[in-house]
Length: 479
Image (cartoon, rainbow, N blue to C red; front, side, top):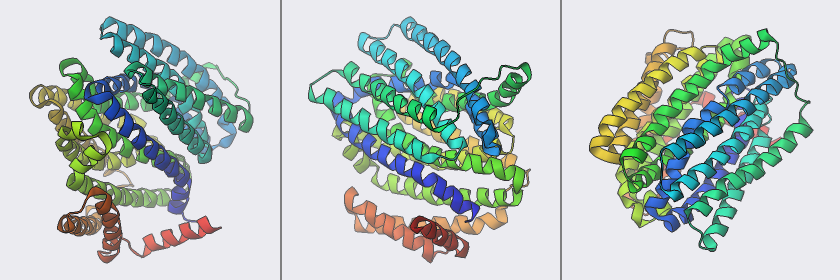
């Protein structure tokens, strides 16, 4: 089995989990957005963004470093994850207390305050749940994370629908999220204690120092990444209205779905890349180049299709009251293309021990995001936030590729130009067919998928090596 096939296999279960979760999220959003309206939907979105910022302080990158080290030597599972669990518990408690103080200090409306506090409890339960996800990823046991994500997405849907059925307000609907996450944590706790060796804690000065010195750059990167991703909603929360937040977040949530899909793929790639960096760097370079090609194939098609059908997508998911968010979605979706490619570069840099480089680039991205969002939101509201997100993501991918161009993993412009032209031609063919037929969203999507796959073969985007990977994957699935 080739390395690329191995990665696709490992990520397959996580992609399945993503599919299940996104279907559940689609159904959940279908009901909650219509039931709550733009203002109350904006309250939940504001709470989500607050937790997104504060939640990153619960780990500080220690688990990511543990994934890399355990992927290289599975015998380290007990001590690395036992020690990181202890520090995660401490960081999570401190973060929650700081979060509550911040919320109470800002004197939001009563409903907004209650929703924010409930999401604080969600942050606690999610912190420990993601700890177990790191444990699974380091040992390439993706099936447990698949089940866990399916449990959470199903539970939050069921509980939310019960709240809606009984006519509960936004506070009760918001309570669905921490309740579902708590029950999901119970499942992960059971798997952790029954399937893995007993955790041990190593508080020796040298070990702890090494854990923090090498782990914190991962955490700082996440801090900056979260800032440039969530800052638009934070600024809108304080200088805009709940309606502005609701409209922007309706588009941003679709971008988050794309980020989640790659997040699962990244989780599968990272341990493999970390191992290859110490064993076979030529294979690592080949894997990275292939992944970037596949991410561009997927990301560009999603962006083009979304631009063509943005209004239909918004009305279908959120209802006619959210139709003003369609222009925002058409702009924001292009950030998704850059986000895909940036994440691929970030994963590689982390695997080859250049996490501090990623931290510096993420810091630049955070600074650009804060400045550009502050300027554009004050003038163009949530549309300005959409443009700011695209500008930030473009800055990030430019800097990532610039750094990697000085390494052995650089992508040769001469070799890359033909595949890029082929991918663009395939998208032009798909777009031309969709525009010509001018059908509804439900009909256009399957047609676009079929046409795009055929176009990828016609233009030569799918080459002989790609076909071999597909054949190997099919054989592995059959076996």
